[in-house]
Length: 398
Image (tube, rainbow, N blue to C red; front, side, top):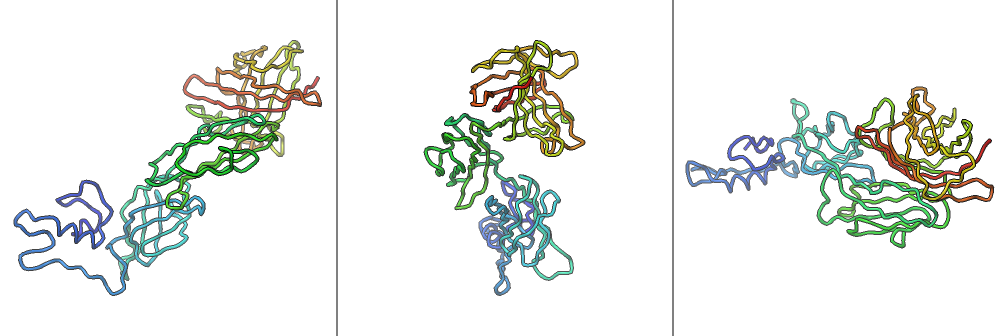
């Protein structure tokens, strides 16, 4: 009896799976349906007696220690709801030992601010009744929040361009009866509108005829509550913008953390660093104080030549001193601190040793400058990959 009330599940006959601590009703049901080995009686009775449990008047306490039975995230409210039986006296709620901030507490429901971690060991401390022994610990509950992944994770598109987006549930399973809600904020459309709801795991985005940045959000809805969401930016032509994903194995001392990055503060230029060679550069993530460049894409061309649609740069510059720039070469340079490239601890490094940059489109603007859109990829030979797309207005100097 006490083994099940404390969630031990160590006394025979054991449950097939580890359970939260039994409440009193479940305990009686289990004992009344489990037969003794030595006679025909069930565990809730002996030859002369029968087990009876009665709670104090008006009591809602159903377990002898705090018990967590379920958790659910509300992304709109930025909270985590913990269901179970906890008693009236509030104690600390921890996830992997880190104390969570409570919003509300009742005997059967606790609401805390949503933790940054998406998984971990959740423990509730509470006091079911007055006792000199101090707070009681709940069993350890394996918390695992749901995650969503968008493919692609973002996009930079020409005016009136189109892109299909799909979503998948990660870090868990989609609850039965749940649905997706897609919301677009901006000038574009998804499936011809701004909101798409239902079981569909993909939408078709179409950009407007004007430049800008749209925001696409997809939420997983269960019982009227958004329990997971993913948000991405879609950059539409006219912006000097870039979006890229850094993944795999990189030297963390020379690259920023893996992730998806989007910037819309780009500047472009064409100049001649050496006789017989022109450099086309697109700079992004530019520091506010010292104008330090966080992202630099450089392509080398023959002086006097024009950039054209479909043009590729396949010769990659590694940044090594012995690697000489020649026409047809390109290079990716990143600051280690993408959030603050001006930071004194941030450094710039050329990354990768192989890759391709392709010009998607070239538009001549009224001031004679060129608006280019491109895609790029690079690898480092040990599992590191960077892929992305960008656009910038290229102004010619010297």
